[in-house]
Image (tube, rainbow over all chains, first blue to last red):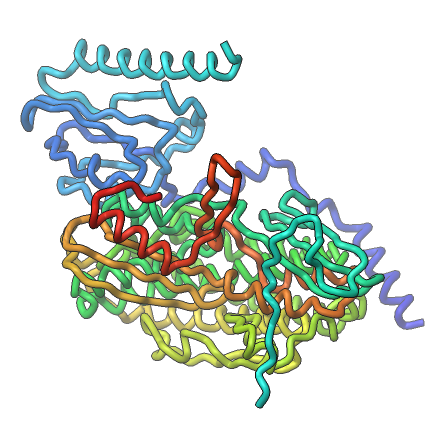
Length: 156
Length: 419
């Protein structure tokens, strides 16, 4: 008898309660991403001395560098290959790397591992035309590889 | 004492022609099967409804990680090594940084604060791994309510990990020489009430597993592994502790600052699946209590967070181990004076528990298989080491550690291809 009373109480309590689950988008508003979230790196151009430390320590080898001296050079990134570990920020001797914490722009990533190149920094004579040309070159190279793969898949 | 001889569990014929005598049905589970979250191939030989003998085939998730480490520098490998396992990433990184620190000779320069933050990360990981495991166990036993309850409450500890590190399952806080990030006072104050809330919830989970008849009957006296069998099949971690082998690396060979904390070693002697579950539940409570102690200590502890480590590690070798959520995790690193490792070996805990779990199955009902297979928390992404396939004959060969090391050293010495 006691058990039945307890069960009835539970049932009534559950009836009075609202739904426990929430809509996903509402939950996202209530729970913003953590303040320490790690995403892709952004280089502050004034501080960068093009030492190449970030390129050396990157575990996935997604960063590449080309330079003449301290003032003239560029660093670019293959965005989908970056695994957001923040290693470049830790080892940067000049604190020039800042990790992007705005999920609206950086969480939207793509799976195009062969073409999504982005210029992180271009200094001195490398600024402008030369940097654009390099990125275009890289994207064209990736496009060629994709075409080869397509041929291989279709069997021609 | 008469030595009992064990037959080789790893039979070679797939059609069952060398099956054990008396078996009339052969059941194949995996590698793709609704039960398996991870790829493993189980062959269960049955007599009616009872299991005569069980066999396992692993090697479906080989990723060549150890070889990849030899091509990267010690600094790059700090971020590769947590990817060895899906869920116990902090403990793999912890052992790795301890190996590097010992080889670089800066072991005594690590501050107390850095060590405490590392320990907090490891204990938080143990809590969420155990909570995940007993949820899935309840799901396998057909008690889905418990799965939802435990996974809902697991979000509390996941939020804590996310708050202190920025990531949910891969905190990656450690570096050779210390830790990457501090745990400031505001975060400690935010964490404490959450931990106390979680303690009450885990106590309720324990009450459910002990008192609720529908789950208890599925676990009690099922898959008993006696102490004698446990000694022969050498399980480690919670599987061994449920069978009366009171062995925990944190107690027997303390690393970091585990000897300065006040905590009890949990072990049961029954050896059935219920004992395995209770070991993990009690350990979760124990870890939560340890987390509170670590937070208390962090308020007064101070020191440099990161000591400098040179990129080139002097020649030498070191063997380190730690207590992962699943058992004893072992790393062995050889440095040759350059900035890359000569050889790095990982032995993850699941491999040591497979033989004991196969022993558990002998003479059990086929309906109890999901629960027994789940009992040791299978994790094959870190277990699978190497498989060699001959491309002309299609022959598969799984080689051992010694053989691999021998081949790798010879290939390097005489500058010739590995195979």
